[in-house]
Image (tube, rainbow, N blue to C red; front, side, top):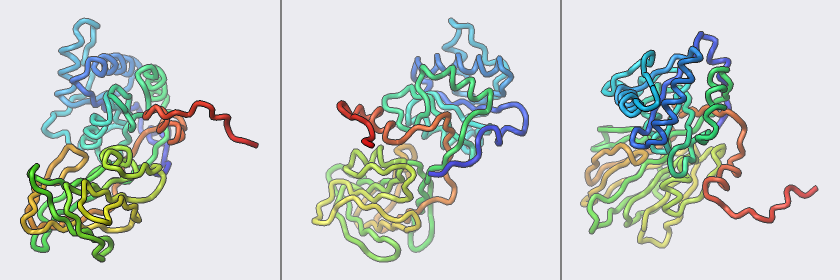
Length: 316
């Protein structure tokens, strides 16, 4: 994770441009998004969104007088990678932020307002919305970069498919009653063969997601690393691994092992027995807008409700 240019630097181009992404299945997310959009439009901010999101806000906002007039609408079927603006503001939980990462034009920072369960990736809570609006109008945000993963599927030595992920790439068994067999390779050298339910390759950002649930370590976002976490492996050596961000991880599926590749739990690629999955750090990062400095330790304590009673502060 690294700090980059702030909102003021990005905004020398004129009026602030904000693209909104909303969890339209949440009443709270729709309500907060409607009030935020109204405030931004009233301040002269250019606001955009996908057709599906804006229609959902319009249809559910009759009671509070919401109007989408002035919102620039992007057709849903052309939205992937095309959501443009100075910042993408997300109303929802981590799943909605992952969706926003798919929609956003590469390089556009994401700013999450947590209206989900945990919201580890979010920058603000619903009660902070007025502060968010003021910061956006004043172009008052900084930007940090998070590593994302790239995975390619090789068949017969040729790349046949591929995708990226912010949290993790996972290879998982395709049939409940049968394990898969995976040979793990790091930097061109064989490491171990696992009979398992699957393997998770995660970023530090994703260390608090699927990899955490599978027994992997929590990794501070500024640590440059990748994680490899086996799922229910029948092997003596089956511990989570932390490898260099410059490493290349290869997962070879044994003949007869039927599996599915997942990226961030949102996108799938059907793989075949004998396929080779090659995972590495993607040169294109995902960028997050930050409104105020917040130590990761504090975020960890707040999101997981960790017991810190009795802490007396730094001893001098």
